[in-house]
Length: 236
Image (cartoon, rainbow, N blue to C red; front, side, top):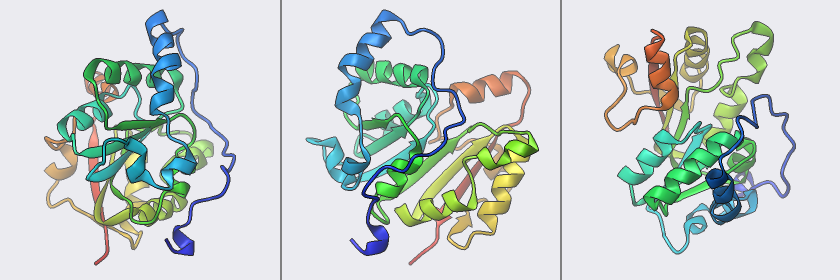
């Protein structure tokens, strides 16, 4: 590992703007957070060697989902790709509880979880250690004064470029036109990324290997248009 790939020695404190608490958990959910979640939790220290985080399972690759909501997409991807190790990051406790319940029901050994800021894990990961990153329907923070809170920024794209292998994908989805334009402007101008779209259908239609999220279904019922971006990490 080079010095540029070395993880941070301590967790930096980031200001979190989204929700952490929601509705009261059921007794079953609360019990799973006490019993099962500790077995699934990742730390920045353990993320420094991501292949070992899933022991005794040894993954062929590691993928990351930032802000997995209720975990529909993450659980479906883990089930479809049993050889892949999945890291899910979600500070929202109710969302974490829903995914842990899915893991308990589905017996998914290839998922590890982190409850705080995704940047902690991204900074700790070795360079070129991820095969895919998902950022699906993040909070668009539509007010101009809140745009600095958006997850997609040049700094975040720089960080993701470090941990994505050449050819690895960054997948982004949104139903907010303003955030779509914002993200396209930053990704299209970033030298580390190449847009994979060949036609309008490539961003208007969700790929078959991209499971629907609960938020996406809700957006469609409300008549909002969803867009799906796929960018590849450039490199040899």
